[in-house]
Amino acid sequence: MNSKIKGINTICTHVGEVEDKQFKGAVSPLYMSSSYAFQDVDVKRYPRYFNTPNQEGLAKKIAALEHCEAGLIFGSGMAAISTAVMAFLKVGDHIILQGDIYGGTYNLVVEQFNNFGIEYSFSKGTNKAAFEELVKPNTKVIYIETPSNPLLKITDLKMISDLAKKYNLISIIDNTFASPINQIPAKFGIDIVIHSATKYMGGHSDMCAGAVACSEEHREKIFHLAKNLGGSLSDYTVWLLERSMKTMGIRVRAQNENAQRMAEYLSKHDDIKAVYYPGLKSHEGHNIAKAQMKGFGGMMSFELKAELGANLFQKSLKLIKPSMSLAGVESTVLSPAETSHALLGAVERKNRGISDGLIRFSVGIEETEDLISDIEQAIKQSKKKHKITSS
Ligand SMILES: *Cc1c(COP(=O)(O)O)cnc(C)c1O
Image (spheres, rainbow, N blue to C red):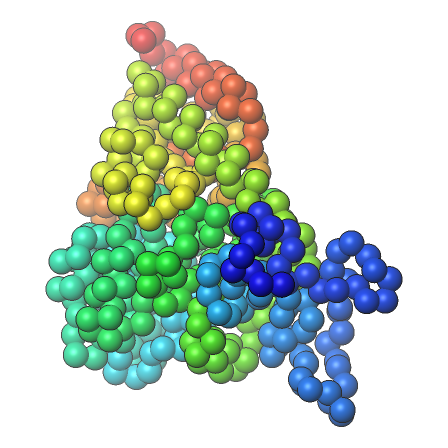
């Protein structure tokens, strides 16, 4: 099937299907073998070689969605990130990373890279100068994440790919928050696209997986390290992920719509100080987001008035669950100051604009009326407990 001529939901549903030649079933058969014949075959198959029938099929779907030549499926988002990044770095090399990145990626860099003799710098912002001032003669990779966690900062993809070309760097993006439904970085010249498939690709908060999409040439390089590190995904989970991805387009579009509606509601609320959502005209990255995204995504954050108490608010929610992860069909909230950004300390959090009242909101597919009434009752509860009578 030529994926280039297919629409996004057709890719989600069909590209990479494994044909059931034996029984003509409607869905991909699941091949659980970890042992395949080595004689009289064209490919030596083994799960850690990323080439079982189900792994190869799903990799095609990921590649098609990201408008790339090739894909690889990993055991987690971090397996995908660590392998893809390390594949392009060796002793004495330097990597530039966006300052606002996923906590696990930040930890990988600061906890491990010194051990491998790899130098790194984090950008102070997301504009061109913030990245360009960090380029050194030994810089090999530029790594970004947009929209970023938790303030949904937007980085200009074209600007990054131009910088990468100018200085001969490999550009890598963590595209998890947008998903390929909303953002196709390869169209803007970004070399390597990574996903925590635990999030929108999986979409049901029931699996952990990762994915990479890139050129054949880059895939070879990443695969070379991947087979040594061994971060492949079990075929059963590959199969489940294929199943989940069939509905990714309709899920994510529903989440986009819900998030826009929730962001508009929250931004008019007297008890909410600020809302960070790229779909709002007031968001500082709105114009760039509009130019490079097809939808603004299901993630946002908002700041409660301090006196309400983020903790009490979250405990008072009945429908929306406080949860560590994100991007499921169910709405969840999280307090970055208490979780993902707790280790940074109060001063660094303040520098980054992460207040104690900040709530990260992963908007699901529920009816927005129900989400709104849950938030209304939680605010009322918090006020009652804190004996706030005004507004
Ligand atoms: C969750 C997440 C990751 C890490 O993925 P895992 O599947 O948990 O390993 C990386 N980047 C972003 C933006 C994430 O949200």
